[in-house]
Image (spheres, rainbow, N blue to C red):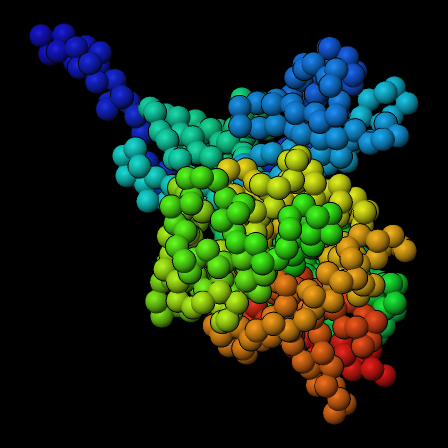
Length: 550
């Protein structure tokens, strides 16, 4: 009788008896990635222009082999998996395709070049880095209780900026979760003493990793750099960086009159790795607004933001909010209760607040007005976010394609990534990834009054307007002057004041443009939680300016 009852229980309640309790798996797990190029994916398009074209992704094995109709080559759109796609444009000479893979919240730019066999080929660095320096892979399983848990993958190579995982699921001995930043999906099979973790792009498997319980401390980072070009001798700065007295400095580059005179990378970074610029890419957003204005895609900077918004958002317009114009958004003076700096109170349209809602535009527009537009400036990502919505409404092609065609291709920049908003549109509030050399190129565009190699990219008038000081930022410690999404600052060297116009991002991402010295400096860093986000200003004033002034 007992055996019969047990059989009935097994039939009725198999999950409750056999499902593992996640409390038993809480802790650290580790394994090895297959090889250093596992996440450096080869992307190919075959038979372009034919009905039976193929889109392929591979590493040391075939991952995606997707057939599509490519008779229309004016704008390729290839949905190779659910929530993943490639979009691109064939160049006029037919030799390359410039486009993006949309995966997670990122748009990875790819340049696919035509080979002799008429196949277009490029490389997708899914983890942003050109090759892993460590094959160590770690998984932190946290807060496990029955079927509840969180799991966070961590690489031994900490140059990868990390995952943003969510949607933690469990069914019997299977767990799954999703990194909404890169688009990677993880599925784990729970075993007695190990976890079999599979990593996917949609339904396509990239690799498998066997994880075992960690018994020693994780080995993360600590890589030496071999990349070094040191024409100017900034030995004291280099020694302090190597001794960790100027911690988490990833790169320092200096160009003078268009030529790189100093270039150095630290902590394993190199010239091929695009760095998360954070809010320094707001200045790139400003350039895109300038290009659309130069092309007369909108009338003037005094146009209300409501001229660019869909009908459903017009209900938020009132007599004061309708005065929020393009000019006020460029200068952080919209007047909205939007403050990314002040911690004493929670601003209704701060980045942390609106990004936690389902409709960012609605949340920003619902915020009350605290000032009349174009009178008082408070630093906030909500302002350039609205600029992105406006620009997307006026261009006739995907905004990222427009950005690539009229800015990045003109600067010969191809190794970059654009962060998107919830709707998959480029996020103008920050988060682009550029290499330090390309950050220099962008700064030189402004130093050269909108020209790149004698070719006009931005009007001289736009550059001059961009660098004008419109307001002081009331909510930042130094009350810096501010232009069109460019910071103003003044430094002292040899008793002389030197003015710089700067793109700035959290953690210490800086582009310094110094017209007086015909110089551009880019510095990238990783100081996110130690209060040293402005360390590049110290490096610039104490070590770089004295050498430039000698």
